[in-house]
Image 1: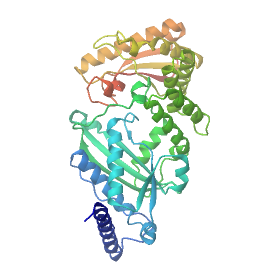
Image 2: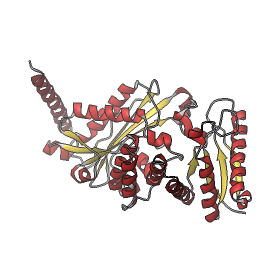
Image 3: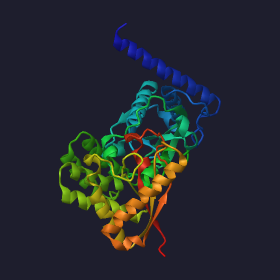
Image 4: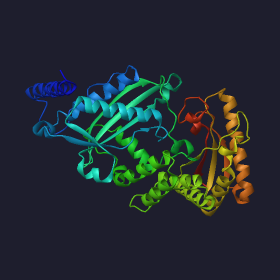
Length: 407
């Protein structure tokens, strides 16, 4: 039999299997209900990554393929994928890219009635569903590397989650390195839009997705294009796209401001980069979520020795001092460390680093001496928690600026 015939036979068998199952569900009275059926109970047992992806994807399909609209028409349904994220950091990583590839591949293989469209503005009007997905390092199990896979399909017309599924896996052999945009980012790029994405992906079927996130889904396609251009080292084109996103309704986002800073810096436009970073800082202060990746030499309060990494730090400090002074903000300067070493040592080190940043800010603006307080959190508020002390957990070695009451 020719390869084409084999593929055709496989597709016919897949469709027949699904139709047979649907017929059984109809006979059992499970199809025709107003609400989508619940997801099959997931297993609390951690399974290998490929198996976890298969479990979650199949559970997602089992829900939508039994919905009345799907059963009655048996027509193709289009899906657009908003790139998947690490839920804790809001970053795209090599592992989240792998998750995307495995989920979309399995959707195509298991249900030929579903087509995946590129994440483009024009396709949002054509598609029925929005696919989102996250990987989350289980907080209580960070030491052993437990990961939660979450997937959701949201109806783009109603804003209701049509299906949601999850599975547990282990972080064995996964590459959690952030993609270039996130690795280069000076700040934790996780604002209300990203939080809405994460929330939507964990929302149960039949409930409304996060409205703030969905209202900005059109501009998200422009941001995604800009980020892809940045990752491909096409910085001039990326800058144009980020600026276009910033001029769009809903474009006032941290990802956009940060992208303008990064692309400007890569293009050697120092003045533009500094102005852009000032806007990043102002956004963070206004939203009380400014976590900056000041990296230090191991066990010290000396900035990372490589000038390629620490070279911009003086400018960052200057802008943080300028924007916080202009906002008349009082702040806790919170130092964080990775999991390497004892709790006591990391508590002391994180406080020393926070105090060092406070001193540096005071040299830029003396008024901040009375408006800032150093705090050491050690590794108790790790975001990644891998303890790898490399690009993967750079966010765990951040310094945060949290608005606090004055006086």
